[in-house]
Length: 204
Image (tube, rainbow, N blue to C red):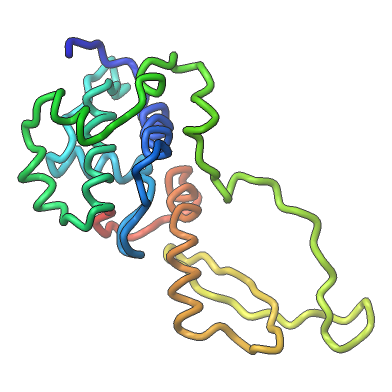
């Protein structure tokens, strides 16, 4: 498959999300594996050899169809419960034909121009980008001006999530683990924009 790399990293990540929105991808098998890879994950895949290195135009990294197929194939195999070591053993040096079969990326996702809107069926919700809805009044056993009691959940990078203390009391360990797992895409977004400093754990 002769091709000219022409997608930026952000464009590649968008196409990966669109490719994984196609039927047959059940999502992450557990909380330790990221459902949709972001910029940091793509760079890590490249460093470890799961994905080919991009072409360079000046200081800009450019990606093409093979990179897209490699990343989607990795995520589909992870969804089947395979480890990254098993996936690398299977897909290292795989032909484009094999990658197309495993990744099953729709042709319209590959062919779409960089500035073109991806197919509606292939877009996934980015909950952190949606504008917040109007806040509902919180009952706290007093009048409308009663101050709501808050508790904080610490997140990686020093971020804090403030929550109202309701009849259940403060979040337990199970709540905190679930919150931290759900917050990871937002934290990665903040880190990519230089608003937060996360540790250098290996992403999945």
